[in-house]
Length: 275
Length: 117
Image (cartoon, rainbow over all chains, first blue to last red; front, side, top):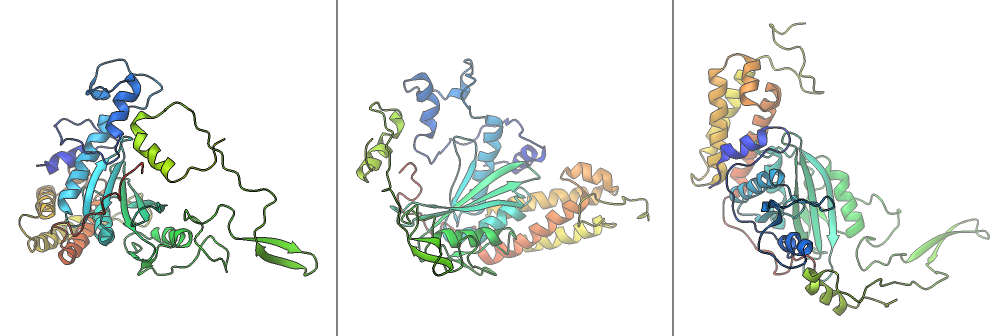
């Protein structure tokens, strides 16, 4: 059971504070997180986590800092206990960043909790972005980045949706969400319900398509040029002087043994011309 | 223009000085506790928020001096503490409608969060 006083005490001092009590076993979502630290450095897998060793620290390696990590883990667990209805998992990444994965129905409750609760006070919405992974059932992963000025820490909230399912707009919670959600709508096509003014923000006025989707080509479909006969800018299908060339700068040696699965999957999907 | 020997300004834009913070805080905390009492007793949010609010209420009731109260609560100026209390009250109201202590409404599909693919 997490001692709330301890969380607030840890979080009441500016900057990271040192953790004194033992916390739960780490559950990292990224597959190779815990193994990168040990195996990549020493060259062979070791069961001991690097930061617990008293060996000399290498200056070129970014080590995980328990002083930042532990309070974030504690808060993530606490949030998971307060909102079990929506939070699917709350973990700290290998880079000491708190990520809270939620069900799409829980956007407003979770963001309100993080903003309004005493132990959260994530008053600043730094960014809303979207990641398109077309192979998934819910291809769009919407990411909310929050910052707590009171406790000097950041949190990330992630949801998922597909092309047709709308998300609830969080403009009622964060005013800053207005333009960010407009950008996600314009670039990806994720619709936000109850948004005060959801229209395009970056693309041209008559533009069709959502440019940041993975199936939208890099050069687009139309090009604009000034036509001297018609004395105006005309829109025509794009014509490039050279074919699009994609280079695969891959080495014959395996570089990331922990990512063997990912490598196999990438090759299966067809990685393009080998050069 | 002195405010009965209190502070002149909070130093924060848009945040006016509160000359009677004890009244504001006790009112907000009492209303929050009333709302929290309507939540299930085993809800983690209720237990922890009640602990926080009761602790702050005890501090407010026992410390008449504003600057010493600010130091004791250790969460910024008293006007900011009032802001936090207002936010918590609003959150408690919303939580009564949303009921986030219920079990998970749905898991993500199997490979939704897998990265690298």
